[in-house]
Image 1 (cartoon, rainbow, N blue to C red):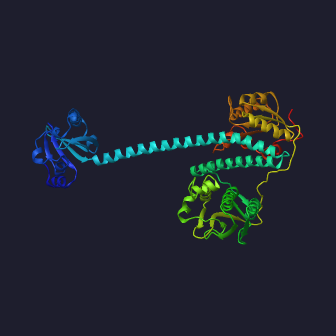
Image 2 (cartoon, rainbow, N blue to C red):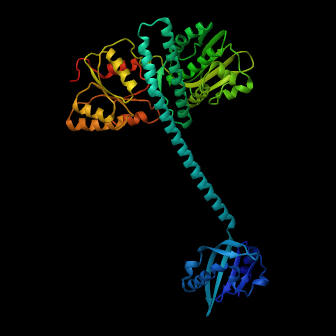
Image 3 (cartoon, rainbow, N blue to C red):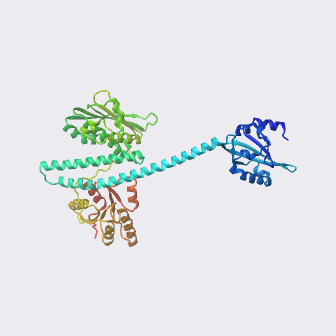
Length: 527
């Protein structure tokens, strides 16, 4: 019935090969079948194949044989199907089978090449479970991220809103003639409020860096000007504490570079602030060094070293300092205060700029922190426009009329006082609905629109007003978003709604002066 070469091939293959007749009796059972089903061919030949098929599949087996008898051979010649077999020990085996049928005279024969796929199916099931777990973990992480963002946005709004009132009213008090004792009290309120604001900003900065949402700016600036600003900022503070602040800048430091000067200044302010805080006597030294990048001569690696003669840092504590909410030990927190976020933010900001912040020495007395960052060198003759400096001088814009949409009573009063002192007429709206009605009924030179208000928020009110303006053919009224939400996307959302500018609380008198100078023409007041 079978040629010798075919029999030899059937015996040496690892797959099971089974041949049955039209009554499903086994005619051929190779070595692979013996291994697969755990039964020698002597016990199988002449037996019905259904003996090695689970009982619940018997009817399906008979139907499949009937189909094979009537179907063209090409349908089953190389078609793989999945079946279930039954091992001698009663265990079910998932099988991949290639089926074929032929006739010799009136007799029908069926052949199956069988392969155990339990390992493959187990792997597929494992992959399915892993994918399911990965999707669940991903959804959980995304949900946690959403909850975190919502929490931070809510916290920012709920803290910044009263802080706007605290710091604003404090600034108004500082303009009055106060006794030395009262001025001291007000100054303590101001410093406490600013400290709370700094902690809040640190938490938000850390969140942005860790989520990869921190956006860096590129602008030309002078490292020597940054050095001078820091010397002016910390010189008096160091002197009051009996310390000497020294600054050194190497001659090879480029005159102009390009990068995010605000984040670079933020890192240096934190390092210098820590150095002064933790040093009781001696010196604070800021050095600025530069080396050319070996692969790109247009890049300068700037190293800023901040060295102090303070208490020093133990080696076992050094790396832990760069973890969020961590300080040297509990006594450090009790004595000096602080959230333990500063160095963590510094390192992450530096890494975001492809640089680093490291503690260079831990053995000797004092500490030396090194901040390295690659910056694009600019030619001296290239036009250099320094970052604009806010005009602090008093400037009164008289006869201007401003609409302030703000639901917080303290902040309403604050805006009224500050703007009135600047010579501006103010109208207050405590909801977005009221603001929209007033804008439709009258004309204003400028609108300060709080984004989060009851009834209708500022974004919706601005969108509705822009539609009304366009329908009525009215000239565009400047609308500035005033919000306590500093999370990523808030500014873009406000600008997309038709707002012209964006202010985050706390809002200072200088911020309002800048807006008046930017948007109001004193010669063309609203009517």
